[in-house]
Length: 452
View 1 (cartoon, rainbow, N blue to C red):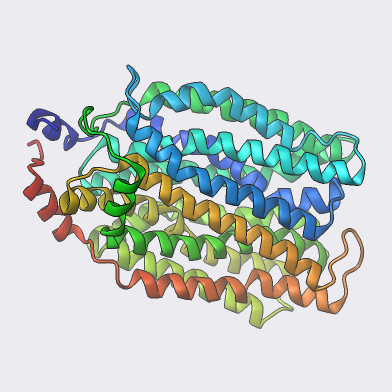
View 2 (view 1 turned 45 degrees about the vertical axis):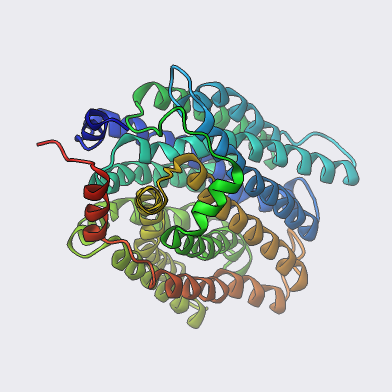
């Protein structure tokens, strides 16, 4: 990369560009969290697929999704167009993404066997298209600036919109469904509305951003060379594993909220408010976490947030007879810690891109982001599979009064099991070595100079 390009990559990002990039995650999080939070419920209680079969759909689809992410990342690094390396995937993938989301919830009249086949086929297709658009979008962070704190701010914009998207998916899905005569029609219309909205937003985000940093066009690297370089990138590997375990915890908790309020509390009407408490607190606290990370470090702030998240879950498990009002207040406290999960992994992974370049000479933006998202998708696969199989194990039967064993199982799946995964993530994160001092040293040795 030439010196003037390096200097330009250190320049501040305009506010409208930060907002234009960030709003892309509004679209991605509406569709992905509508599936994460409601698809298991849709499969078991609306489309009438058994819980174990629904868990299998999650496992297979997400494993496939995870498997293709590194190859998409490799393709990004080899792409060169007039729109850049990453933006064309957003341009040409936006509309297919919206269509595939609709197909998931289309709910056609089928026999039991064909319902399973349809669910598997449409979720596989959606996850494939989502990966093809989302991996390049995520990798744009490393291409827009090299300044570490500017990346945190950029990620703050992105994650704020991401949590808004999560909030829309969590809080608006059920009310939208209830506007229609039955849940089947309601979910079908959710597919239409969210699908159209997501496609439009992705296209807008594409038009709002530019890529400043790219590897030299003549550099070509094989999968083997990329894997060898990644194996030497210990900070990246630690971050991937941390994100893997914490993502399992987050998605397991979120997916069980529907069941906990419907069956344990008999207050299905409060599900939107529960999600509102979690995610609204998370979005409001993003600026606070940015200040904390600037005063301490991204790693320390991330560990603090995960600890807060666990404390909230342990309180919920320990006191199962809490009133709905107090429970929602505790979920709001839990959301304060959950914000760190949304913010810091994505703010830290660009620093590992520079570590790779510093250590091996290979700048693996697309490949590393592809592998990073691979870890996220793998965690989603396991979270959905474990949730579905565990519900079946505990004797869950949809749309009836649950047994005490099933109710206890739902509570454990929402609290204690996620806390165990969070603990594993914190242990790994403690060994993450990159801080602001090391990052500045890496940039200096590679010749990146910040513009005055």
